Image 1: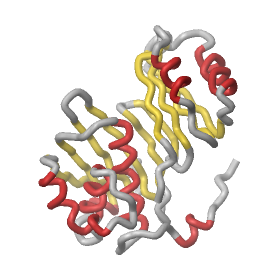
Image 2: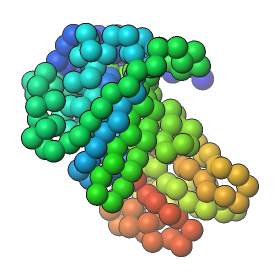
Image 3: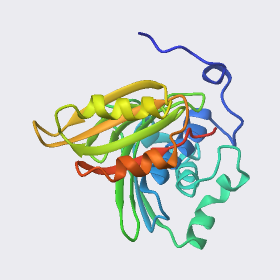
Image 4: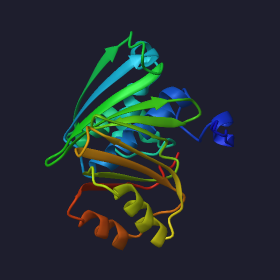
Length: 225
């Protein structure tokens, strides 16, 4: 089924310029990476691909991704001075560019964050109007927009796991909009990506985290523009 367009797809979000795809979308990708990490990052490695690789400095995408990692909104005036704020937060960061990744979307960025206890790496696409698509999380294929409440579950590839998780969410009155599961191999680790219309209760998150076959649970509230 084709994705439906929203008003934001056409006119874009309230944002600090110059471009919704090169600034607002990039801020949101950075915020997703920060939410998945779940704590203050110590270092960030950012790789821009294709169109981004050629224009990220001139269009402010470098400042935008750092602003997102600092968890700024797209209309935050600090985006323009995010490098200075990152240094104040003792965030070390560096940029790479790859201009000929033919299999990737023209506006693709890879973000690797490291904190005191954790590490996360995501790949995101900025599709215009502030709309994004996260296509990879820690080496697992994914496909979510962060426009909805998103639940990420790393778990053993266990028979009945998908139905079990869906039933838990149904009992919490969470309406599932999309659900996908990828795994490294049969009976190996599986990665569940679930987009929902409403937030999940804390008690339900705690229950899922305490299941013996569940390795990690991350909840990302809908990422505001």
